[in-house]
Length: 499
Image 1: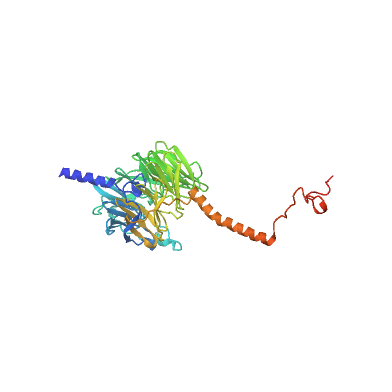
Image 2: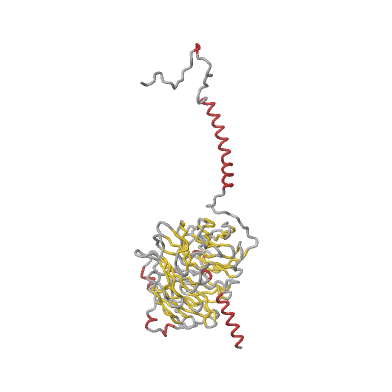
């Protein structure tokens, strides 16, 4: 029996640490996996989920995958959907809070879903609505037993961290009070969960005990996901009128600040951070320029800095491949950069709005979701478009890869969750970016366009010649005399030279 329990616990640990268990795949936020279907794709299933919360205007978080179930967080519930059929597997009530991603972890041998809840005074009012309506909306009861057992500190908490069993959705421990509303989602590294709250505090929670391990005040606003790697927690701090945005590295065990990196050029905000091969990658955006940077995890020194045009969605971390990183701006312009040097390898301009939909790398294909419902599949090596889902005016908010299935969260009129599988009959493309200079094709097109222009010029010239005569009269031979054998005078020769 002991042996069986050990085997089961090991299997649970493997399930919890493999696959798409956190936003962008894992704690490093690389957005990359070798496990997924090849393009093109077809829809396997779709399950509508109406927006919730005050005014029914808040959708679903990015999905995570556990035990063949896609898990998403809505404003007042946590939902699970069967990957094979799209049928709803479970629903758990959640205290009203921002729809931010959960994380899958192992707690005492059990596979757990860890998520935040709570919105303090409530979400901002919808445009044109009474500002007091959102703040006075009563929250949905929490599934945790914290309500009756809360002490004084918990009674004043604006949020909580909750862990439930992924199998039967029972609470694994009393919810942990947070000092503010969390918009970062949950990051899990080993047996610790990390969350950031709106006042700039980073909180580490021991998942075994369900207790706070440490808290660290960063001194700036926290609104994007936290990344972890090499024993560090990487935090993107937003700036204000007096301070620059920055990347801060905290010791994952103690919370002590190890280093802080600020941009060289004045910047307004910094993207979420991703981690790979000893570097932290992020994008600083300012009024005059955008900089993609690689920072050494050891000491925060800048390894390289690449200037780029366009504005980057701060919620989207750079995608980290084997030797390249990929960054997509709001206009759908994707760049592939050498991870070691920052040199640009290729670019592709989709010319469509990409907002709140982080690209992911599945095998050798970069998938870029757009606000108009378009999904572009770009070959990660060549930068060519190989497949495209036609736009349908329903935003693709986030993607996750799970075996032979892609999971997508939708907003707008098609709000809900859907899955895609490989379509063997799909027509594949080899389309270069509109920004690529194809010299042979361009010269050929110019030659084709020039032929009718030359023909038209010749015809028009002949017609004009017949209508108005030659431009200049025929000149006599140099040896021929004029009338009465008088020499011909140059008409441009002055009769009298100036003195």
